[in-house]
Structures are given as structure tokens and as C-alpha cells.
Image (cartoon, rainbow, N blue to C red):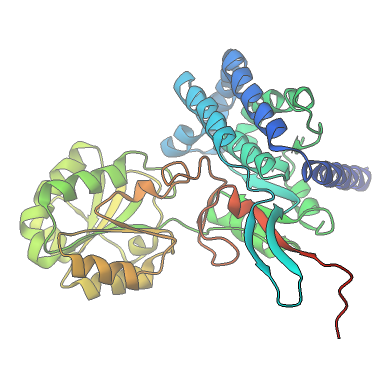
Length: 424
């Protein structure tokens, strides 16, 4: 009986992916007007059906303790009228973005008379696997469809009721806008085996994108037979240079850690130049403590702020996703860069400085998807960087890095026009 159930699940996953593949072929030639119409209809429906979505979300939030979710994870799970209104505005912002499909990347007229162009085309079918954050259902669907791709969405079991409600909102608007009904599909089960079956379908699914904890991302990267766009960790740093303006440094560090501590672009480690530490670090510690942040410092930091918890070696490599910040005093810019090179995850790093040479060296030598100068790490976000909503922040180097918006969900093809040309 168990074997039969497994066969049924595998067959349903195959059928779901096949439907997505057929939808992707239809989407590839859909005009931008129809995709934008769907986004606008979905935004209106999301606002009209707020109560329905919030009721579903309340069921997930109530069950969250059963899954062992901490306060930061519950915050990522929770929807409210403000967040839903922001999500609706996000859909409209995606609708307002230029359609990347058909964009000419380069063109040339060859000496033999051939007209050569390179144009953007959809990837095809995108399988999105994510945890906790139901707003990803909206962001992923919006960006996939706008870029001409069919989406298969698989959220975590802790958000199943929220994701189903949000998917209904999106799905109900597809056919009225002239799009295929299977353009956005939600994996109907929370059974982990379904993910494995889908990851073994490279002939039907073109790209997998995991978004969540390191365990999920490693599993997808190991099992997938199609390309994977991923980031393993957001171990982000803020380095306060010797020349930093103290008030600016405090504002940036507090924002980077506290504004939303449970997300991947929140700061996890603070590095302070020794020449500035005695004046800046105690003030910064007071502001962070007032915001409820636990500081875990090295010996030099604790000498200046005795209330700090002693840092353990593992703290320098930890993505806390909570109100915890590791703190270290360094004796030079080179030492700060060396620390980031050893412990960073290639996500986001920031420098606070008034020294242009120091800023340029930091930007040149720090190898991360985004480097901030006198700005919070929280700005490494598709919306903040002008991409509209994002499907995730990639720490890979191929084929996309950093926030992934519409263009990052496309590939290119060469189109060549001749007039009876043959090659000699």
C-alpha cells in the first residue's frame, strides 16, 4: 500500500511538471499586456480577499510552536494587513517594470550581410522551494510569470494554509487575464518526497531555486538534476573604519541588525577599527542593548563594553537570524577584509568610513554579491535596488549573483537573419 501511495505521488509530480512545461511554452509568446493584466488583477484580488488570507495565516501562526519556530521565524511567517498591502503594491510594481522578453542584448550587421541579434527569452519552468515566508509565493509567481516562465511553488509545511490561500488568489486571475491556468502551480502536498521527485525531472523543470535554511539549500543542491540558483548563508558584516562618523555608524549598525533581524541581509558580525573602538563601540553597544540585541564580543570588545557575552569561535561563522551580534575589534582595514574573507558567506558586507581610499579598497577586495559604503546591509534587496520584487539573493557566481529579478530569470538566444546565406 505504501508503495502504491509513493507511485501515486511520483505520478502526480510528473503530471504537475508536465502541465507546467506546456504552460511555459504558451507563456513564452504571451504579450506583456496580458502578464501585466494578471498582476493588476492579482493585486486587486489580494486586497479584496485580505480577510480570507489572514484567516488562513492565523492557522499557520497558531501551529508555529509545534514546528519549533523561534520568534524571528514566526515573524517571517506572519501576515497582516500592512504586509498584504505592501505585497499588493509589489505586484503592481512588477507590472510597471519593462518586460525583459524580446529585449535585444546585442546586435550586429556582419560583413557577409547576416543580421545577428541576441535576445532575452524565458528559462522555461522554475521550481521554487522555500520555507516560512508566505510572501515568497507572491514574489516568485509575479517574477516568474512576468519573465515568461511557469512557476511550481513548494512552500514549507509551517505555511501551508497561507500559501494555499495566496495561490488561490493568483490562480483565479490567470485565465481571466488570458494566461494558461497552469502558469502558477502549488505543490499540493507537504510530503518531502514530492520535492525529491520534482528535482529529478530536468527534462521538465529548467531551474530550481531553494530559499530557506542551509539544510534545505544543501539538500536541493545535492539532489537536483537541473541547475540550482542558491545562497547558503547570509553571514553579513558591517565594518566601522577608523574615520567613520560615529552617529552614522550607530544608525547603520542598529538598522542592519535590528530593522528585521530574521532575514538574510541582516548584519551578523560587527567589526570596529581599534582607533575608533574606544569612542564608538560603547555608544553603539548602548543603542544595540536598548534595541534588545545580545552582543558576543572578543576580548578587546569586552574590555570596552564589559557586559558583552564572550564570543565563541563558532559565532564568527553563524547566521543568527535573531537579535544577536558578534563583535570584534580589528587593528586595520586589511584585518577586517581578512576576517570577512575567512568567515563571510559572499552575501552582503558594509563599510562605514569617511576615507575614500578605504572605501575603494573595501569595494575592490571584498568578494560578495553586494558591498555597501555608508549604507545598511538591509539595502541588498531587489526592491531597494530597483529590480522590483526579487526571487532571492544568490551568492552563486553563475548565472546570476545578488538580488535576482526579471532579467536574472531569463536566458538568451541568438537570432540570425540571412538571404540565402551558406557557409563556404
